[in-house]
Structures are given as structure tokens and as C-alpha cells.
Picture (cartoon, rainbow, N blue to C red):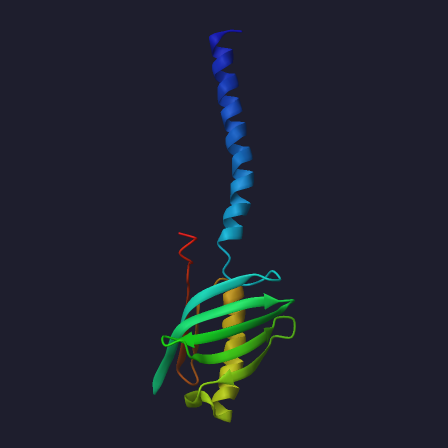
Length: 150
């Protein structure tokens, strides 16, 4: 076999190896960079803030997919649960299980339910913020990585 043929054969094998490697690595990266709990049993953590004109709520939001229903909790910096909710993606419905006293008013909960549906829709598309123009409420989420993932 001539030297030129060996070099072309090596280049061919290297390019095939790279192509095969990319087929295996890309799905693994997509699996690790989960931004929304779309698989049963999957869990996602976010830094979250809800900013209103008269105050804000911030902390860590944890969401878990429990058989097609997403269960979420927003804990403030002191570990107190600010909002507990469920989201049914097929019905596009949010149910508030509990809210802190500051938000526990029927008219606030009505807006919060409607806005959380939009937030969840956005998060499922990889959009990490939502702005309610009518009530001037900003919702911002940032993926929170575990220490084991870094």
C-alpha cells in the first residue's frame, strides 16, 4: 500500500471516528442540560425571582415531573416555602397548593395562576423569563447546577 493511500485511509478513519463520536456525545449533552422536567421522575432546580411593584419573592424553585404532572416549590432564602404548585401540561393548568401570607389573596392568586401557566410554557421552550404587562410582574428563572454537575 502506498504512503498516499495510507494517509487518505487514516484521514477517512479519523473523520468516521469523529462522526460516530458526535452521534454519541450530542445526545448525552442534551440529556445533561435538562432545563425542564419533561421526563417522569426528572428534577430541575432554578434560581427564581418574582418582582412586583410592592415587593419581590426570590429563592430556589424545584420542579419534579411526577407522572406527567409537574410539582413545584419556590423556597425563599430562609428555606420557607413561598409557593407550592402543580402544573398539568396537557391541560395547561396550574393549581396553587399553598402561598405565603403576602400573596394569599384571591385576586393575587388568580393572577399568579395565570402567570405561572405562561412561565411553565416558556420554561418548556427554554425561555427563562416572563413579563406580565398588565400587572407589571417580572418572573425570572436561571438554571441552578448541582455541585456534582460542575
